[in-house]
Amino acid sequence: MIERTHNRDMWTTGTALFSDCERYRYLLRIVWQESGPTAVVVGLNPSTATETKNDPTIERLERWARRNGYGSLSMLNAYGFRSTDPAGLWTQSDPSGADNDRTIRAEFCRLGVSPVAAWGANIKPDRQAEILAIARECRVELRCYALTKSGYPGHPLYMSDAQLDSPKAFAY
Image (tube, rainbow, N blue to C red; front, side, top):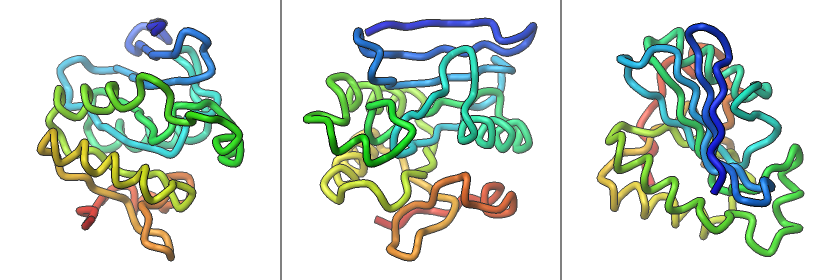
């Protein structure tokens, strides 16, 4: 795995964990206040955000985390394959990537906070079950901003600020 860190400004550091081929991103962590709590969010798959720059989803989540008193954001994903289109996931033999589950498990168990599930309706049911099993193993309770019409945790780009500011328990 490749770990890269970048000082975004005097107060903010970005760190990303990539596969050796850099086609998979397993973790993106943005820290602006070391002593503050960490917001942990699990999306569907990484898009273009890196340790140096945000994409629209990360930008929205960072604003939400700052507004709600967090000191950092840890972004995980159900699938580690980097794609701007979720359909790109299904062209891969292993869209999760070799180190994704290990990274999710490490973050869930290390932080011991309630992660927010935000992967939307494009997740495969068996993959959702695998992430829920990791959450149970690490004894963390998943939350979500809101549910899609089909009952999956909604994506943050499609939520109001009020929904983002009050995540609910994700009953699974």
